[in-house]
Image (cartoon, rainbow, N blue to C red; front, side, top):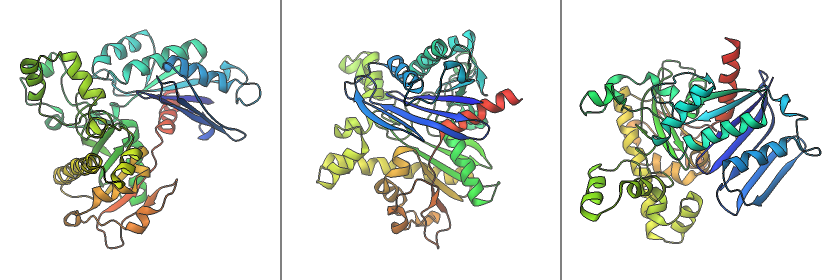
Amino acid sequence: MQILVLNSGSSSLKFQLFSMPEETIICSGQIERIGFEDAIFKFNSSGENIEYITPIADHKQGLELVAKQLLDEKTGVIKSPDDIAVVGHRVVHGGKHFSNTTVINKEVKDKIKALSSLAPLHNPPNLEGIEVAEEIFKNAKQVAVFDTAFHQSIPEHAYKYAIPNKYLEQHHIRLYGFHGTSHKYVSEKAIEALGKPDSKIITIHLGNGCSMTAVKNGESIDHTLGFSPVSGLIMGTRSGDVDPAIIFHLAEQHGFKLEDINNMLQKQSGMLGLTGFSDLREIQEEAKKGNKNCILALEMNAYRIKKYIGSYAAIMNGLDAIVFTAGIGENSDVMRKRVCSNLEYLGINLDDAKNAVRSSGIREINTKESEVKIFVIPTNEELEIAKQSVALFEN
């Protein structure tokens, strides 16, 4: 069975084609900087490595380019759209409706659209990817895997906000959690590495979007992202935690429209707002040159992560491992060192030499004396989506 997995981010599109259940990758690729004139298209298979820069206006155009490449007579990997049996889609927000992998129909699409206000940077491109895939791969089964699903195990005392009960009961306002596919995948890998199912793990997903999860005995029990993917850690363009009174102050005292404030918190804040850059690689380079804004932003970023490490260790009454994953978590030894410094009281001791080594596989970067394991585990949301899609049709 060939399964195409599509992972649509706010300005990116990752794809992998698997032969399942063997978990063999037939090809993979991604598009970065969607919406810009200098978007980057990458495609890799056993026989081809293709990369070029081209204008890509939106996710629809990006997915059409992916399909064209898959079907290319010389460098493609399939002969017909009908070769694809299943298309698995990452969908960020499932709200209260979806706690499991789901076959997509009109009702599912309507609910994904209705939830777009809660994840405005993600659900719209997720839905667009679904609709374009339905046009191109007409005979394939379309499946949605929701980022929020892994966090359905979070207990009520953790997901409920201290606002009048009616807002949960009538409007379903609560902590939902995101990046669940990634946190599920890497936490399971960490449990395997520890050889300890009854474990206490903090998974740290650091990319353009960032989040952390307290994973106890294999289940999510708390998470930094809440009702929407804006709270918690400082992100590429999203603010993370802010005092909600700031919103009312800007609106009432300075005449800002709610739409403008929302846009500011979603697209103009985070590392971009602090430094003028959203790419951590640029920020780190600027910090080396002495850019005070970039130095401070890195300090703020690591400080926020440390706060959550401490709180999650407290609620789990201990800690066996922390896991760094996603683009920044896997590749930035600078951020890992900043996060792990001065945490000896928790038993966290980083080995600087191990931390500096780059590797594509799972690695342990703590000292021998460290009571807490520090893992770098490359996330593979696409494989997790493929596995869940196969399981749906096996059951």
